[in-house]
View 1 (spheres, rainbow, N blue to C red):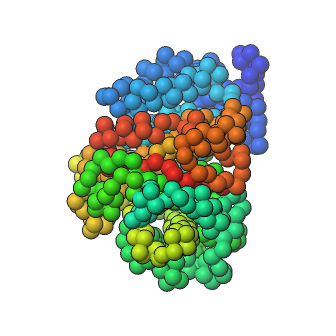
View 2: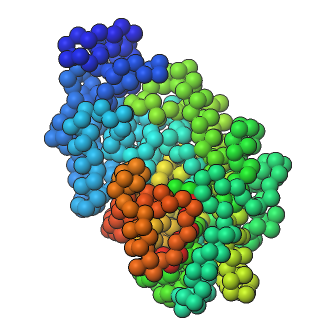
View 3: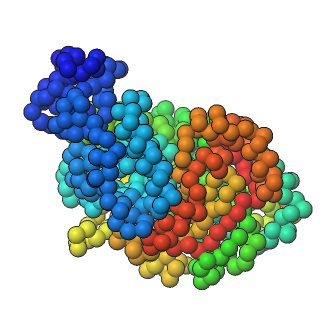
Length: 562
């Protein structure tokens, strides 16, 4: 690499020697603007605002907006050319309120020329995914989309398994593999809870280990961990932590069959061993909720939800340190695979490998283990939650009707069949911060929900409502059977901590009648409603777009956080 400051007003210009290190495009050697040498890599000032624009090629916001077209009241199209090398178009879902956040992000990016530490707006990340080898249909962003690692959080993309160039990318799954949500119903009513609300919140907090580095109380040996990674919820059932019918109401029936524990590193297993049955920290929670509104009586009854005020429990957690390590290990091996197979991307956070390569297969097998671990983790916390309720109400979980309504994953890649250009194809669908939402009569959803569509669990923010949706046929046609997963952050955790006051947030929750137990006070500010988009606006956008349908609205009564 030859470095010069020719014609750049003090900026470095790098001769790429035949490779666009920034845009990820093989081309004639050209001079290109780059930031100083960092960590052995030349890092771009921007994602080549104009591929052939030379040193001063950054586009203004007005120029960027020419590539974005509003299709209808809920959708925007991202046209080819928004970033280099796009193979398909992009689509993001946003109403008038939500679009402002995305465009403000893009405006700030354009004004600063991406001198902000490599941060990319979610819309740019969406388009970069549209440039990956083997991608089909469109790169899709749901209304809760926000910037993430590689893929935006809220991004869905599918890759044709018959195309030998198609890739799998850990950035399209995320570090918390199979982070997801489980909903339990009960036959309790809000009036039953009111006399013991604080005691029940404390009991739940005492039963479920929470916080960063928390260790579980579910006894797990190394041999048991191996079995759990392979068997998923079948292990939970065998060990007595799950009811036989629980897995029937779980995505993939709580077990990915391609799981191979030999593909999971010793370090990942070491991190996962003590954390079975733990909530963790961040946006994870266990929440006691009351039914506030029923939109679809038929669907709600199929779920066992029949009246306003009915008490439910929502558990949001994932694969903890084990899943994080699986993703970290895969990124290292995939960077080597990219160099070997000559795979070039717009963003090195989109490290990937051919689906049929050894690295691709190894990652998918290890990812399946982490997904199984997450289902076991939520099953273990379900067991602990049932024990807490049984103790408080001097009853049994069965008598309290504490059945699983459904369990969905938010971060996963799975082989599924979808129609593409009029042909049925097997695709590897990446869902990162998005939820599977299959329609009525789909063969992969339980018999109970064949006439309603798959339940979709949408967790709100601390102190705001959550929703249960159902999948639709339009979702299958437009989003590979996917919808939103939550509210989606509107500002960073650091920004939340600097702007919000701990006691003020607690007082607001108390005013709403919400009990809270939290291991770390700073998390109260990070997870306050002000840190997120309006979950109702997100859900309404999906409902209006027809990619999912509102069934039930739940409000928080007690919140347990790390």
